[in-house]
Amino acid sequence: MSLIGKKAPDFKAPAVINGGEIVENFSLEQYKGKKVIFFFYPLDFTFVCPTEIIAFQEAYEEFEKRNTVVVGCSVDSQFSHWAWLNTPQDKGGIQGVKYPLVADLDKTISMNYDVLGGEYMIDEEGKWSFEGEPVAYRGLFLIDEEGVIQHSLINNLGLGRSVKEALRLIDALNHLQKYGEVCPANWEEGEDALKPTFEGVADYLSKH
Image (tube, rainbow, N blue to C red):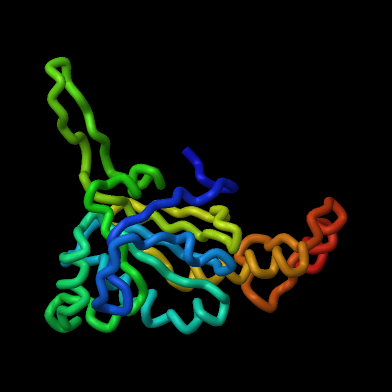
């Protein structure tokens, strides 16, 4: 299932904001008019996850310059998020992270974004079980100002993501929205883009 070009699935769920404040009905709807990087990670108190979460925090000013907010989500509870956010980084924690972390304890958000690493099954006797990994893959979604998903990326559990690439894609979307020009392979802010015509492609290729 691809969510590209569709409204981002809405939800209301507990979250921890500002590094330590628990809210019960967090929703992405509050960010209409802004872009959102909404990313999933497998679990709190793990190994690759803190490197990504802290990297997003370290680049947060760059996201703010682009009118973009960052929101993380995993299948842990809000209390686990709170504990991890209040654990020093030299002790395996992510203290200092201020953007929201959403609690998807019932796994419905992960299912709706199609990043859950498995599925619930029911046998002939009516007994439920879970097949696969009961955690979210490393999904990342770029949601525009109208709540529409413009980009998605899903990595397996051991593959960390690039914060620089997330910023590059925001720049590309901003350029497209502002100028109507499409962004070619490996495009970065300040480089030539092209008109979405055969002539535009030919002109671009002739210069590169």
